Amino acid sequence: MERSFENRVQLACRLCVRALVIEGQGPEIRLFLEGKTSRGTVFVPAIIRGELAERMKEEILFWQEGDQVFLEGELDWESRWDGNRPRYFLLVNVFEAQKVEAF
Image (tube, rainbow, N blue to C red):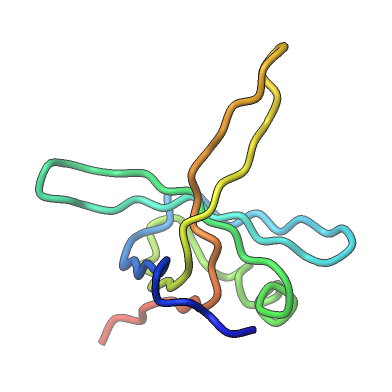
């Protein structure tokens, strides 16, 4: 799949909680990340799907809360129903992910 540079984000951040691997038609990995900005802390949900999720589903179980990670992806959204109306959430659709090892 060719990726556009119009919607690309790179994040160097920490895991807030351990990754959640959801098995279904194909694995899906959900991450909740914490990053620092000049104005404070931001929290960002991210999702890994497809071939990358299939390759990472075993390795990701060793990632711990507080681990530093580097992700590259695109901004995306999903919706959930809250009572009688949909709620929309911004997230990062990840297409590259790695744990940053300390030297």
